[in-house]
Image 1 (cartoon, helix red, strand yellow):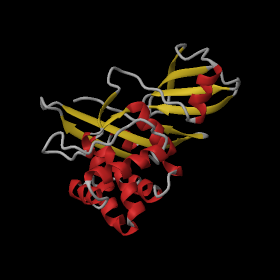
Image 2 (cartoon, helix red, strand yellow):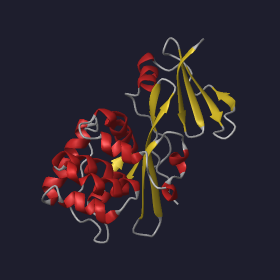
Image 3 (cartoon, one colour):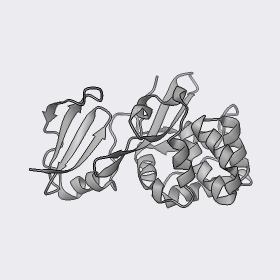
Image 4 (cartoon, helix red, strand yellow):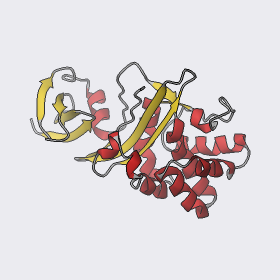
Length: 232
């Protein structure tokens, strides 16, 4: 059957076929663009599940790590909230997103008022973007790090949010900054052509680092959201 959507997820390529009830999965080499090893694991999906894959309204995640501190990916909703209140903060937003400048992000957070007010403003951005559950951390959980960076953000909720970000009020300048992340931070999802992405990283209490990224990538007829959270 002819395909109607193609969605690339890391080194996997999912092709949703006409009829909305069959997904082929392949190993995908991003260098050679070769497809190998079709697997049946996604064959015969229920109609609603296949449609969710195709139109971007469904979030799928894999692996044991399903949630963790947002780290610098939290700068996305904070930046949108700050621009809503004061568009003149655009240069500060660009520093926070493109360079992941922590001082700039703190300035944006503080521009929103008290920690509670800032949390509500950032949370409203999440709700506007389709994340209905994430609570933005306003307490100082770890004194050496920002409160909002310690927000627990699941992969599924982050995927829902980033998928809808282009339609969120005030998000366009933030998305533009996500297209101009400095080369030193353009690893992983940042190597995909045309990706709007943001990374975040930081250590747990035992010194083990979590490195996570979220990206919005145009693939075929739709957008593909790729949040990743590997521990190193």
